[in-house]
Length: 194
Image (cartoon, rainbow, N blue to C red):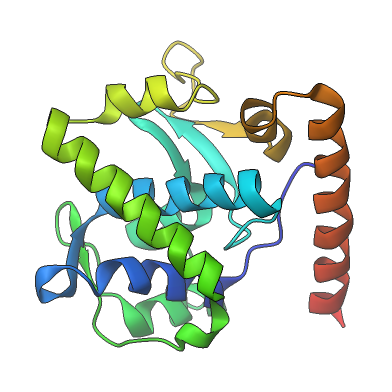
């Protein structure tokens, strides 16, 4: 398994779920990405499924959801359906912030996915309250992070297996879960093509 199957509707709903709780529906990109990653991590650990199907990558300031980050930065072609969908709900990046401008359909998210997003938000907010800048704290908390500095690249892709190996101690169990996720992702990809 090398990649998940990205679901733009779930990604938009997840980002909006987190953002709508902020004053003015405005959130820092750092907080949004870290909250979403914390929720994805919990989903993989708890019920062995991703929420958004986004892929992970290590940046100097930690792990992020790569497609969501590219959408926030506007680095996805404007005519791409994912960018069109994202832009209907979120403003263009304004410095280090984005704003929710129209609520999406939250029915794409299950109750447990919303709960994981809420717990991710609580974790990130509590760490910020305690430490202020938390990139280094998160890099220690999430051992799958690898520093891309010195690699000649700005980021390093992380496979689902690399994340799972940090979440599930038993190596055989981690491999079994990876195979299970891969079969589900293969079925999703086949459905998207039909």
